[in-house]
Length: 304
Image (cartoon, rainbow, N blue to C red; front, side, top):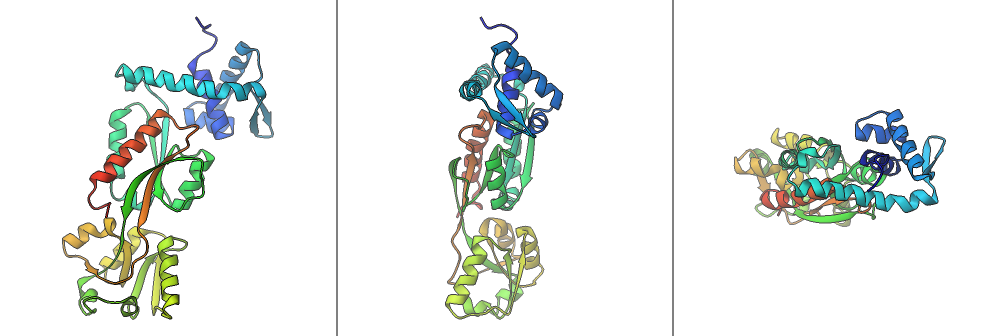
């Protein structure tokens, strides 16, 4: 038997400090105070008779003993979660799951994902952040997110990436603007109108600008927005021709508020992935990625 002087809370604090980099961040993540985190780790070190980490000017680094303990502590925590899941008592699992999604996911099936996770882990605190793909990539790498759902490209390589599928871009406009265009317009046929796009440095905008340059074309006016939803609203208001993901505009196409423009040029589709750090992801993050894969496949508007 193991002495009661070593417990899961201590191991949880130890792993959280290493993953998040500071005692303060670990305390926030675990819903406790910084002194409590310090006490748990000090008690663990006393029980083991080893210094596990060194505190240097607001940061921490592992000792050799800490390096050896870290993977074993992760294994113990995952095994503890597996025990309660096997017993059908996910209500005993506490903590926080931080999820980041891109805007398109947020306005399509993110609510379904949050509901599914809430049903599976009723006592876990769920946090949802909506951001650009590059920011989600950065926050996943730094440990500020446990699960991120966003599109390529991404720079952070040390993460599991579960493919969710592709979402195509299409050209749309209000019926009044789309009606006078040729039946099969080329890219140049669109540029006399105001063009509505997502902002830089999104891949679609870069491709659009490159395609115009390669053809010697110049748009009369391009209105860029950091928000896909704002671009969508401007298209609904008849402000111009919009280059948008099909999943975002599909309901408006069905009810006739927007019309698709069958232009012969489109950027590459958005390729979405559910990603989590392979070394520090909790079973909840892995389960969330599996749920995201299922929900993306079930959303007929999302995939194209």
